[in-house]
Image (cartoon, helix red, strand yellow):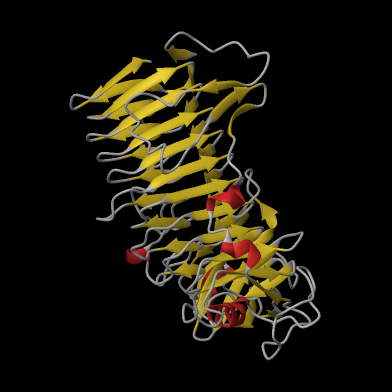
Length: 447
C-alpha cells in the first residue's frame, strides 16, 4: 500500500472543524461552508433548503399526481401534500407556477413519470425560482415507458417503440446497483444470436436476454429530454427526484445565470444521446455564477461523464458535493469519460464521495484553472481499455486530497494520482493500488 503525507489521521473523539486549504480560492463570503471531521467522516453544516430563494417555501404550491391527477386541475391544495386537485404532469405544474410571477414549489406524489411528463420534452421550463419535491418518497422519471408488453419473435422478443437509444435490464443489476446495459447489434438476426443484446428494426425494438422478459424487466431509454433546464435562470431545488435518460443528460442546466442549484437525495442516470458523436453527461451544470450543491445524489451511466461542471465564460461557479457518487460512465466508444470533472476556474468541495468504474477516461479529473478539495473520497479505477487513473490534475489546476483513497488497477498502466502539469496536495492519502506519477511540471506533495 502506497501513501503520501503523514499517514491516516487518528479518528477524532468528536467533530472538529477542518479549515479549507489555503489557495482553494473558495468565496466564503458568498458561499459560507464549514467542513467538519468526525467519526462518521467529513460533512458540512449546510442546510440545503436555506441555499435557495426563501420565497420558494412560502409561495404557491402546485401538486402533481401521475395516477389520479389531471392537468386541467388547479394543482392547489389546502396544505402541502393535499393532492385532491393535483395536476398530472410536472410540466403543467411549471406552467401554473410560472403564471404566479413569483417563486413556487412543485410537490410531486411519489410514483412513475415518463417520456414528456417532466418539461414536455424541453418545451415548458420554470421561469421563477422553483423547488421540485418528491413528497415523502421517490419520484421516478424515465424518458421511456415503465411497462412494456413483449411478443415472441422466434429468437427475440419485440415491441412497437420508436426512437430508442439505450436499453437496459432492470432485473439484473451491476455491482454498483445500476441497471445492466444490453449491447446494440445490427438486426434481429444478430440479436437472436447474441444473448443480452437489442436492436431497432424500423418502429420495433427486439431484445434477447435468454428468456421472455417481464413487462418491467427492460428499460427502453428513448430520445426525450430529461430534467433539462436550458432557459431557467433562477434558483432551482430538487429533492427525491430520480431521472433516467435524457438526450442532453438526465440533469442539464445550461442557462447563463447567477443562481444556486441544489439537489437532495436525487439520481441522474442513463443519459442517451441521439448520436454517439453528441454523447452527454449524466449531470451537467454550466455557466452558473453561484453555488451548485448536491447532497446524497448519484450521477451514473452517463453516455460521457457522470458529474460535469463548466464555467464556459460565466465565472464564479462553486460546487459542493456531499456524500455523492458516480460510476459506470462512458458508452458508445466515447473517450475521455469521467465520473467527476471540473473545468475552467470552478471551485469545488467534495466530501465523502464514491466514484469509479468509468470507461475510457479518468475517474476524478480537474482541468485548467480549477481548484478542488476532496475529503474522505474513495475512487476505484478499472478502465480495461487503457490506463486506469483515479485522480488526475491537469494544466494549471490544483487539487487537495484529504484522507482520500485510490484503487487503480486493471489497465495497461494504473495511476492512483496523475499530476499532468497540475499541482496535487495530499494528507492521509491511501493508494490501495496504482502508482503516483507526474509529468509536464506537475507535482504531488503533502499539506
